[in-house]
Amino acid sequence: MMSQSAFATLRTAPAADAAAGGLATALGALRPGQLPAAGAEPRVASGSASAAVVGVAVASLGAATTRRRKQRERKAKVRVLATKAIDSELEPPPALNLSEDDPSAFTLGILGDLHLDPRDTEHSFEGREHMKKALEGAVRPFVVSLGDLGESKDCNETKQLFSGTTECFKMAREFLDGFGVKFDVVGGNHDLEGIDEFGTDEQNLEAYLHHLGKETPQFAHVVAEKVLIVGLGSTAFRTAKYTSHEVSIDKKQLEWFENVIREHPDEEGWQVFCFSHAPIIGSALRVLQECHVVNGCCWLNHCDSVDSKRFIQCVRQNPCVKAWFSGHFHLSHDYQDSITFPGGNNRGSCVFAQTGCMTARSSRDGRRHSRLLRGNSEGFEICTVDHSKGGKVRLDATITYSDQCEVDPDTDLMSDAPRACSTMVYAHKHEDFDHDKWFQAYVPQEDDGCYIVNPDGTLNDTDDIDFSNPEQVCWWHMKDGAVLGVHNGMIIEYDSMTLAPLGMVVSRDELMERRVAVIDDQWGGSALVLYNDGDNDVTVVQPNEDGSYWRKVVRNKMHRMREMRRMSAAKKWMKGLRSVDEDPKVLSSYGPYTTTAGQVMGLSTRAINPKA
Image (cartoon, rainbow, N blue to C red; front, side):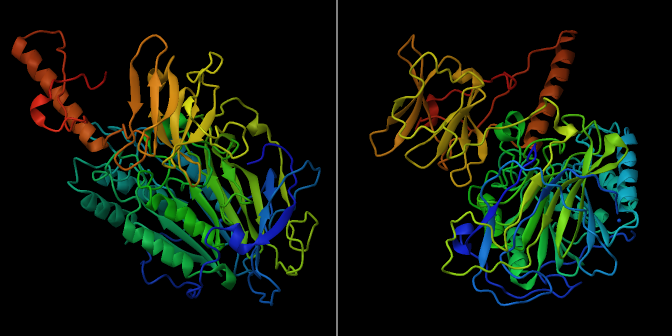
């Protein structure tokens, strides 16, 4: 999101150039109220939506084809993309006028990570009342919860995590029923944490679906004429290969999603709004290097280098996808990049929006936010419901569709001259952005001046280039195509297609006072090495077996919890055996081991301190 007033002129570009893969093939559309055959409609509560709006930021985006109920021939199909921004004193446009008489009008209340805790419900119920007031009298109201329904702690003195349990699901259902309107839910990374109550992810998922009134982890609802909302839910916790905090969308669900999007083409006037607990790679939303980047759980299917990119590929190829809402980061909306707009950045026609938390307990910055989405066939508004200000509704972005975009094939498409299909982006500097809590992770840009063109030899070969300095930034390509960079005193790997951060390669302590070099591996590739000035030792930073470099250091939470329970039991047993008050030192022996040894007898299984 822009932090100060700006005006962007938009110029046309051929559709094939605007999005990789071009426009999707239309495979038909649903009638209003009809759901895709691949997914069943969950059972929901019924009830009532609206809000007074305070202006903040506006984005107007052109559409590739004739919009909504008007169908006219065009000379050429083009996609309109923002290309530059200049200062402007333009006034924001008025709020959308939604009417019950308009069949395309709708209102959505969007809830971030709830993390309900039966011991601490004040902010949760206060937030619900704020949202109910915002939805009171609104047109075709609907509530979407972005998952992580319960607190990941022992909330009821059972020595079990509350999240993912039957009691959690019952509390969440009662809480969501209390909005008095139709609702649906997508599962987050904590929603299958009932590891003591349920033996498998499948059993846990079945209980989640039953108590929330759902038939499938995903959902699709036609909420207004030509308006489809689509949700994707996480289905793995115990079976997660690495960190259980990764939000995992299974292949069956992913294929369903791709089919649903293709069957609701922009050419037929469809608007599709997507919802998931974590954002997708390529969304460019603000992420936390100290948490989600180093733990490898920023994006949907983060650890799957192929499937993680299928979401952004679908968005690029289908301009019907207008916005995508996610939570997961526990960040408020008062940050640059809490909303990202399309425009020359290969994100299709989609606006991506972070959704905050209702409770101060769950918020990383103490700010308490939910989202409100209002729209019709002319466009939509993204608002913030500020729970720390009595539920005040703040308008963050207004997206309007141009009716059509006709361009003569002989026209100079690279000209900055305005055309009938040109639109504007307007943004305010807002008082809520006046703070210094700027959580961030560096994202490489092609023109940021930090790129090392041909890395060969030592990269920090002079004393004035200190890679352990948090302010030092640079990035480069390895010969195998991997993108590595230095930021905040660490070496980070970035996705080669989107340049989104993937994970930590070298930690701060390992990089401290080290030289970093990229050398020829003498087999047609390159190798990353670290060394000190004071000795002859050299460290080779080996890529993983899958070709990536970032370290999958956070293991599955279920296994870690069970290991800690065994250690606690061993400590208690040893104290009883020795009849002493002093706590014994508890070590653990682990497998598998990562070495270059070709046989077992030369290895040691010596125990280590797992917290060291």
